[in-house]
Amino acid sequence: QVQLVQSGAEVKKPGASVKVSCKASGYTFTSYYMHWVRQAPGQGLEWMGIINPSGGSTSYAQKFQGRVTMTRDTSTSTVYMELSSLRSEDTAVYYCARGSGWYGRRGMDVWGQGTTVTVSS
Amino acid sequence: QSALTQPPSASGSPGQSVTISCTGTSSDVGGYNYVSWYQQHPGKAPKLMIYEVSKRPSGVPDRFSGSKSGNTASLTVSGLQAEDEADYYCSSYAGSNNVFGTGTKVTVL
Image (cartoon, rainbow over all chains, first blue to last red; front, side, top):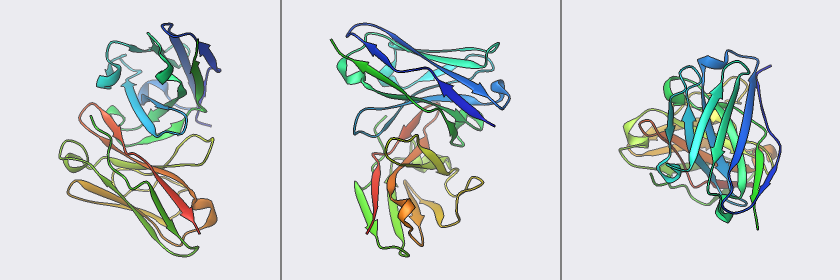
């Protein structure tokens, strides 16, 4: 079955970086875009960016430009999201979500289980 | 890119209908027919309920329907059931970007 499995919870200190992985299975990895979405405690969903696993091209939300990097490894069907210069406001659950259609604009139809990232000194 | 505007809450009794609005701009909701809606239960990942304004993925009950007029999209849940109590988020393509709504908590009275 189609599924996205994310890496485990992380605890980081302010100023550090975190790299979250998302392993896809059950479908052709390079045929679908991958979004990254985060949700701070008690808050709404926030779109961070998107990667095309086929060629590796990316588009990031302006808020995260310069701090986020999304990459992929086609040999393991895994996408990665690295966020640097962490601050307490980055404490959130981070989700990867498969995007169908060009630029994933037809909706996010499969979601990972979420990875909790806690930033604390 | 500013978040799309949704009412914080909506409610209805079992069997009734509830409609949630999602207001954006001509750069997102009004400019593309790529509005989607997500249902999220506490502690769970979101679930796609509607895509491309009004299309339902396989397995989503036909009690859920979507529409759009100008810069405002809407999600209607008809025949409310207890399991429909959740947070709902709209989302729109915005030209190489994506933006979510502020979220609406639906309560089944």
